[in-house]
Length: 189
Image (cartoon, rainbow, N blue to C red):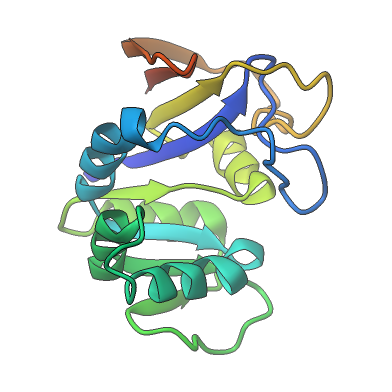
């Protein structure tokens, strides 16, 4: 069975955005330090799942980045360009993007169907409400959290919809010179 992996930037106090549009102006930009980890994690998946709200700007951004070889994100855009995208939506009737399908059914059934398909793992990056719905349903198997050296005091947490606690096992922790701490946890069932 394929795993669903989450990569997300979070503050030290556990928030991943500070407003209704998933604002992340507080994120520490340390691409040189985290690049290899991000590329390897992205390359471990051949499918990316996305909520509709994020997809509208996210997919065009990465398609545009794929046309700019000098962009620091170009290597990552090549990986993302190869990945099949699955947009979870109740409102879109068709996808306007190549290599993208729409998932319009029950979240748990749709994700489990993807997990049971052949191929590499599946990855999700955000947005907040979509990821919190995945967390609530225990659908994320691996958490790759990039803990930034900032305290926000308030914001949105991907864990805000939990009905019960989830037990995680720390697999790896990497401290970066920028102050970012990459934490890799597996969900324990």
